Structure formats: structure tokens, C-alpha cells
Length: 217
Image (cartoon, rainbow, N blue to C red; front, side, top):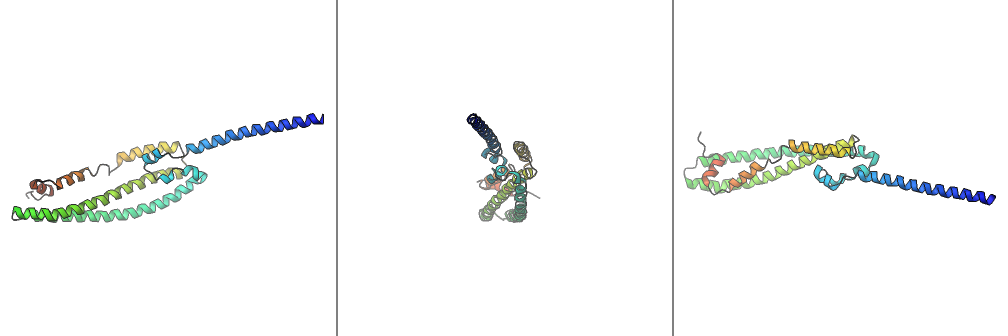
């Protein structure tokens, strides 16, 4: 009888171990799936225009994701302030280019002959065009950087607010769409492209008209 009792006890213990293992696997699998669902896919990273390092922010930092997002926001805001200072410097450079263009316009308008006009345009205007191109490239880079900061700021604010996937994805999709609509820099270089094309135009008359030298007061 004692032997039978031991066998029953062993069988029950074995059955409990099996049940525990199965439940453990089911729980582990569920947890793993939940973590996978919190990973930001590369396609979303690209669409939302956020830093790739945030792809696993919800998984890597878990319950501390909110605090981590807040610390990242502080760092980002510091960078944004630094960029704002450089944007102001860029505006001064833009004003300088405009003043230079005004000086060229006056010189061409006051030129006593076609030969003088050609010489001024060939030298003064060509140098100005190169400087203008440099300013435009720098300005475009600053604008792109500003937009990158904005998208990262929106993302981090959501995470800091305790929002996780899939709700985070829905909010970012909405924010990204709205920002594209409101984006003041979107296609803002189409005009500049047209200017660049006219800069190399062979027709001097059109070039004079472009810089306003042929306009009558």
C-alpha cells in the first residue's frame, strides 16, 4: 500500500510539473509576442522620420520608457535651441545675399554700355550665384534638421505620456500626415530651382529682368 501511495504521489507531482511547464511556455510565448508588438519597425521609423535608435525604446526600457523619453526630450530641446541660433545666423546670411543682389542690380542698371553690362553680369553675378548656392544648401540642411527634431519631439512626447503600440502608431501616423500638410518647407525650393535655371540662361535680357535691372522706376 505504501508503494502504491508513493507511485500516486510521484504521478501527481509529475503531472503538476508538466502542467506548470505548459503554462510557463504559454505565458512566456505571450510575453514574447507582446514585446515583439512593441518594437518600432524600420518602415515606421522611415515614415515617421524619427531616430532609428528609438526602434526598441518600448522593449528595452519597459516600464522606464516614460522616464527615458523625458530625458531624451531634454537633450532634444537643447539641440533645438542650438539649431535655432544657427537658423538666425542663416537669416543674416540670406539678408547679405539679398543686399549683394541689390548692389549688382544697381550696377547693371547704371552700366553705360552693353559691354559693361556683360562684364558685370559675368563677374559679379556669377560670384553671387555661387555664394547664393552655398547659402541655399546650408538653409535646406537647417530646415531638414528642424523637421527631424519636430518629428522626434512628437514621438518622445507620446512615449513620455505613457502611450505604447498600437495606439502610439496611430497617433504618429496622424501627426506625420498633419505635419506634411502644414510643412512650410515642403517644396519651398521649387522657386529656387527656377531661379537657378534662369541664372544660367543665355539670354542676357531675361537675366537682367530676373534681377530687376531692366525695370523702369
